[in-house]
Amino acid sequence: MNQRIKELALQCGAWHQVYDEQRFMINGKFDVEKFTELVIKECIEVVKPTQHHEAWAPSYLGGVDGLELLNGKIKIIKTHFGIEN
Image 1: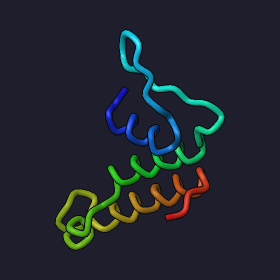
Image 2: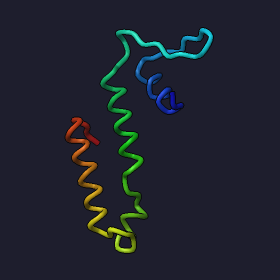
Image 3: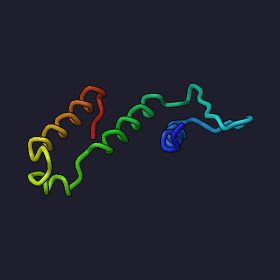
Image 4: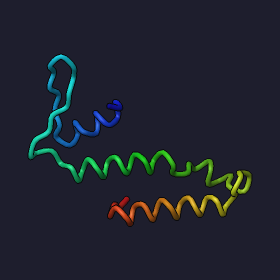
């Protein structure tokens, strides 16, 4: 399991259980909705344009249109999953 996924799982109520290898355990207190929202937000952060990209959009392949398309797709993802900023 990816280290970042482990960190997000711990934030949502998972805990470490060590046998012959490290495992994560969850119970009824694990907040699946929060975990899912955190994972989706992390994915959005990966593709979200930086201030540099926004300032220099005309210089990049796709230009301003590409930037608007990307921001539109991010909005669609947030709407689809019911995530607010």
